[in-house]
Image (cartoon, rainbow, N blue to C red; front, top):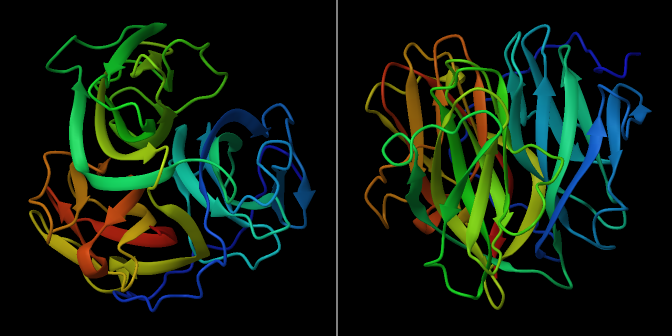
Length: 373
């Protein structure tokens, strides 16, 4: 068995469209966010590789607090030889019929994933369908004894180098100024988009005033537009650095939530579950809106995947009962691509909307957990 990837022949099983999710038994203990930045797996050089049966196991006991309820991971699929996908789930549980990362042949791509850690286990499992290198970086974890609570709101654009500052060059850094954020904000949740790329590159987001960590926040290739959610601690300067490795790239940052010292919501994980799959009904048309009802989950952590697009398009998710559709995108996808992105779906009475800009596209929604008091 190769450490480059665990290759299975089974195809992803399509799930029926489900628009209402009855609340599962909530985790007994919620957790608040504690930032951490550490690489824990890289199958390309053998870092952290443990194989158990047909999947990889990642031990996080040296990174997270004892008793932590969930972990936030940036999962990267590198140099895919075939179209591939990766599923991440809590160790010791059955593999769910969900996915966290999709990578097209010849590409390198990343996606954020929030995964439960059922006590006392501090491990997660990864199942790879395809052939690619897998890299996992910890972005933080949820602890029942310390950390910051989350507050969600509709995305607000904070940076767009296409209209201000120009593209970031090779080995270059641009600064995201968040000085308007008050002192009680400890970290921010951003949807980071890279576009107009001229080379295969990666982008790293980290707090100003500290050394750039040896991790990546997102990967993008020439001519691609890719988005990835990032959670970054906010330093005293209230500024975040965005580093570009190679070529030139335009960067867009939309602020979708904050973590606060006191108060805020705790995160509760649920067993990963597919709740919407339009491949089993009808794709979302140009200008169309899909309303997703998650019942009691008003602030849900979901993985949104777009596939079978007939045009270059973007999806936007928002709470239609609270705000007009924001001038921001959740993910970008083109014909022949399958692109995921993690997001916090805020929805009054558990209902959030998904908007498609152009063409027709299938939308898949996987539930990972929710924020609550």
